[in-house]
Length: 334
Image (cartoon, rainbow, N blue to C red; front, side):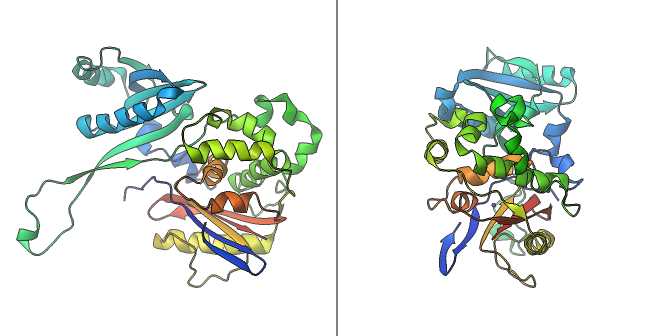
């Protein structure tokens, strides 16, 4: 089964007696990297369609969608400082890229063949064929042609690991405390990194924003720009410590959801033990999981962001395979 790669926003938020609805690795994660399709991970060459500035982001996104629909090729947006690059296709050898390039160059005179840059991809648009549902009544299906579907991946921010490579300010020994789960042998390395990045954020919100989210400062997307602005103003929050009971709560729900392909917070057999919960689907990179929850695209209440920036002191994290979305992460706070 082909896994879906879309961002699903869900949250469950409890503070004492207050409840508001709305609004979160294992070896398998290495196969899906930051949520890219397998074809992308095998790609060595692509066709670069355009190079523009970030001020042209919306126009480039529109171009990407139109290109996918017309040419049936997955396209990728790459952010490099103030530049937006649009690449298309996945080719294992340059000769295959050349064949497609010769077909496209009459409409894209500035196109060129480039090496794949998966580490810098911020957004991608997938073309895939979707078969019509089977129906016993022949008249219900006017023809046997499959419907076309464009599936859009949420923006994932590329960042350097560790942050000290990006900013000397992180070299202060006090930030060692962010790695609060480093000695917990029941956690995977990527689960430990969730604690690490989330604690860096909570210890110094402004520095975190300047290190990883500087390109969102003047974004036309209100979710992105509001996040950057908020992190410039808020005070530090308590470091989150690992809690085994919260981990078991998160793990049970992540496994239960993954095996059934379920999305959401309703539990069948798992016991609830948390004050706030975030669930994330389709992303395996720990830093990108945190950033996507902070941006909280499409969630007016910003529930994920509120949970991540609330004065909790303990956390349980589990990242598990998911039947429909390849990967799902559950984070239970207390």
